[in-house]
Length: 219
Image (cartoon, rainbow, N blue to C red; front, top):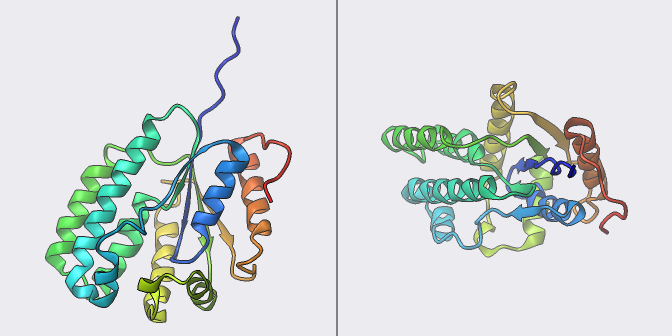
């Protein structure tokens, strides 16, 4: 008799711009030997234009992200190994697009069109087994964004980040029971030392998915 195959897990890291999602996703994947699917930010051709004129480019940006995120999650579901994903397709609609609509940067017509497309797409997807939401204050987000030095993120409006934070809280409340989502508040943790966030994340995986963590932590 052969041993049964190890359980396959799909974990996603959620959070606002600069919350530390990519760093955590990469570290978890390395520690656990999982595949890592990163957010398609740097290659997005609309981002510089979007930050210069949100009203003009919001719909283009959000449809691009939605398309890429859908492709990304299909790839996750087709793989036979466990995966960690940097940001989810659900955040695109429930936090970013919704915030742009509330701020008047995405028209009612574009929002309804986008939401119909989103609803159709997610109907074909399997949700993550667990979403880990990295919560962070606006002041700390701004420090981290400045430190990583992406040119197109210079001058990000703190009120926009605050609106996104509120949208994340609304999303976490709305999707309670639909997604297994657990929160780690990273505000008080220095961006240069994410070990505490990493350890808390490992604890969450042990307790909620019964994942065995390999010895020898990644430094």
